[in-house]
Amino acid sequence: MTTSFEPAVELERSANLKVSSEVRAWLARRGLRQIWLADLLGVGQSAVSKRLRGALPFTAPELMMIANALEISLAELLGELVNEKNPHPMDGGSSTVAGGRLDLPTSRL
Image (cartoon, rainbow, N blue to C red; front, side):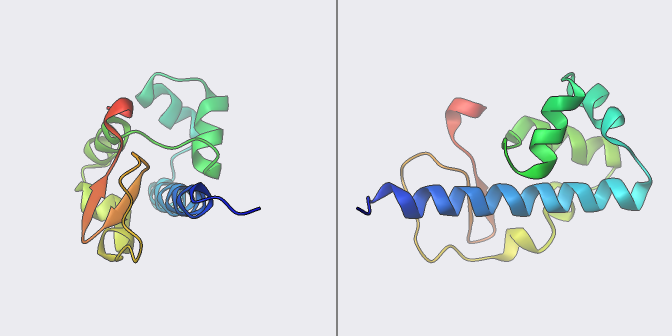
């Protein structure tokens, strides 16, 4: 049985994977390790590992902290992800990137 939430869940999972991929790429470019990111965010290395695998989403403040520490813009951090269009806009509070804007649920801010 298919529910209306399945596309939303899949879209959120896809967005999390894309964001984590961009963050991993920037860490690699700068020669930085997970422990650096854990210290920056004030979380354990296990939590960072989950974020970098896309299993746990980064929050908007975390992404801003990362961009600031790397001395890049949030748009640079997210790369092409900010230019993707969302073919199925949602209003259920999930993290999506649509129309060049990163929409994160307010409960995570």
